[in-house]
Image 1: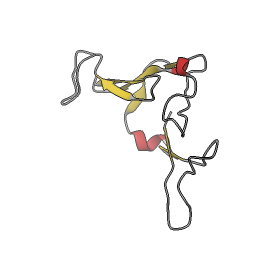
Image 2: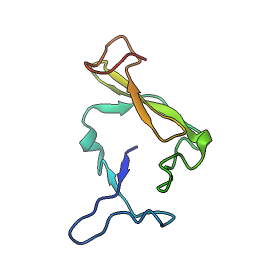
Image 3: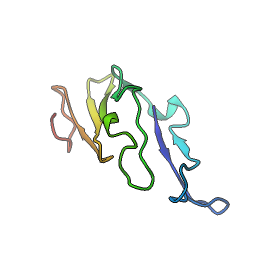
Image 4: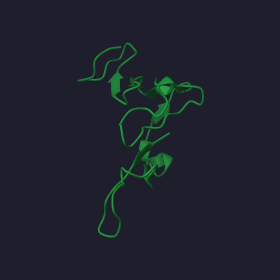
Length: 105
């Protein structure tokens, strides 16, 4: 689990969106970066539990890969992160314990 990003630095360029793919960095680099946050259950994204965002369109490469995953804490807070076919992510709280500023699912 993590987020892949392309970052332009003084020594490297950002993603060339005319290319089929880009070299990316991942976050988190280690599980310690996600202190006390866990993936609760299996992610539900298409057939392979993952998705790819097409860099040219910003949409999912396979529109059937839209889905969601849930994150939780030891204190009972939870968040559901969903990604639709357009590549748009949304977040909501599925449990009884809400997160301030995040709508209920």
